[in-house]
Length: 338
Image (tube, rainbow, N blue to C red):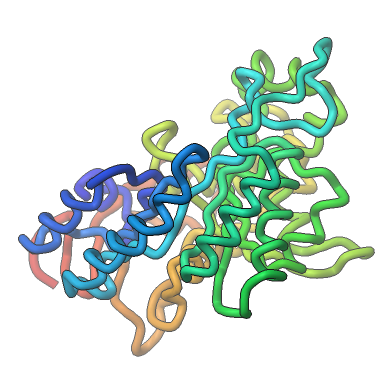
């Protein structure tokens, strides 16, 4: 909580909860020390998911029954559709360069769909890790299957990372009501991209990674807009929102490479990136009715910065300091009181 509050974060999702991992959250909330609104995502296991159809609702009831509404929820199930491109485990439609390997899907696609349908029927929000284009297609297929099999409800499915999307699948995000949760910090041509990622997938696929603007705005052929939210994948990478925002709007490295940005047509404007980091996350949290905006009647979940990031060059965000953070009007970083 201290680490999150120090950078101005007031809501987070713990996207990988295993056995009894909700207990520290419940204990901290009971002591009044949970200073970040938190949603817990139970990890679905490909080998044991049928028994989890019983245990996950029981654990959700325990969290909900503790009486920390608005502070602690457990409404989500996390699925890993695939791995990552850098070690060849992300699931790809076409093989990795110079190999016959298509990666390592964590779930067989029909089983993933079956599991997503089953948890969706229990009222759980699906949150699917999908990085490769085959993994993302399997995730979209699973969400489509849940919509077809179950009665309509406010499901708000999430696909997270969304690194490499086949162009044919881009319009399906809007059509299926999928929230695209990006780790925008990774959308830069840094050494990791040059040494580990690009050589594995080749120039054509490298040039269509992290399609943030295309999903947000749609295309002339498919004008549907996709809701974006942003995340960090912390502790894999930094949790500092301003570092993430800087890359979202510039798509350049800290030292300015490449000039004009990597795949510049996928840059977001600063208002678009801020909306994804605030309102987009509030929608993902089922909380847009009282959080994610600075408006009368909304919760005073606020961060005070030492300079206005909407003026001046984006690089200045890296020198911006968090003066204070408030949760529901209570100061949780930078001093005491209101």
